[in-house]
Length: 164
Image 1 (cartoon, rainbow, N blue to C red):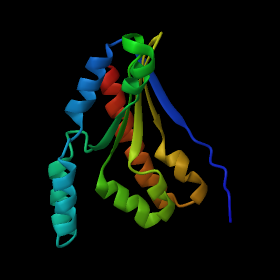
Image 2 (cartoon, helix red, strand yellow):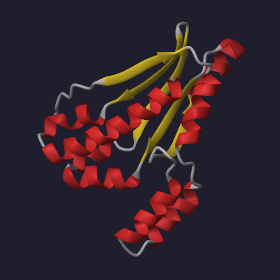
Image 3 (cartoon, rainbow, N blue to C red):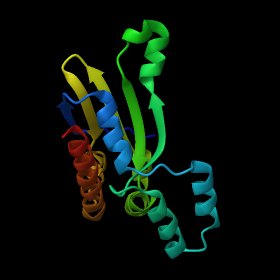
């Protein structure tokens, strides 16, 4: 049994744009495939080229797609009513990037796809993301860090554009 400590870097920014506008900007930039159909396509893919075609058709302009969303604000509203703030967790990524990460460092599967948190607070809408490179740095693999840094840049660009 082993336990490791991992130092995580959180990218976070705040915008005064309304929650709905921030979410709309993210939604416009990421793909929203029917996950049942998408999974069936992945299973049926006969090789890497066909897999790539399926993924490319599913991702949005950012190169990312949504796997699932958790509306934590809806849960808050059950207790606090309509005054509860908006909080949404998006699980997004790109299966081709995830494949590369896991191929290079198996434990990367614990962190991919990634989470983006969109959280309404008194000072504005916070967009947060825990950097993949920080999760994978302890593994000491420069190749996986390059892939992770590219993913980090892609996600941070998405969040900056949505906050913009």
